[in-house]
Image 1 (cartoon, rainbow, N blue to C red):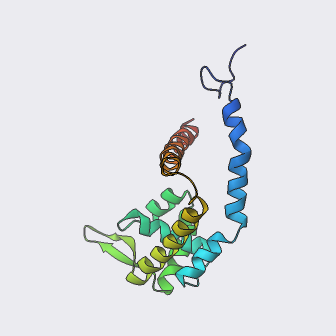
Image 2: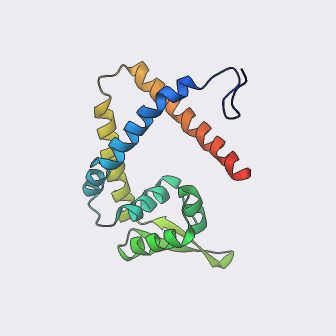
Amino acid sequence: MSAEPDTPPGGDGDEVLAVMPHLAQLSNAISRGRLTEHAMESAGIDVDRPAFSVLVSIHLAGGPLRISEIAEKMQLVQPHVTRQVQQLERRGLVRRIGDPNDRRVSYIEPTDKGKAAADRYARTLIGWFTGAISHWSARDRADLGRLLARFADDVTAHLATLDDT
């Protein structure tokens, strides 16, 4: 019996198939639950969810980004990101800074107010997830972090091969 084209050598994919319902359960629980809204409320900023996602993405980047870089990181189209950045600018959460080498280019960075809001949001999420697994052993928590990071990196890299074909 030969393996399917997307099945790894030496495996039949049953282990991955068994995980899929759990991934769907987790995705639904997070997206349908009030966790994101609760964290946004804790941040004390009144912007829509997509704009807040852009703010958090810029903040986590650790430095100013061009609109095209934000769009690429978030896998969104540039016009959508531009609208979200404009909303954030109006609220004083991000600012544009010019490129000294090219006046046509501007970078987006969070203001102090934007950084503080993104930090409050992150602290709320971290506190919630920490509480959800607080009864786990230190080893289990470390294994989750290590394996989840590895899984995210590998899935992202593998998905990039779809773009190449």
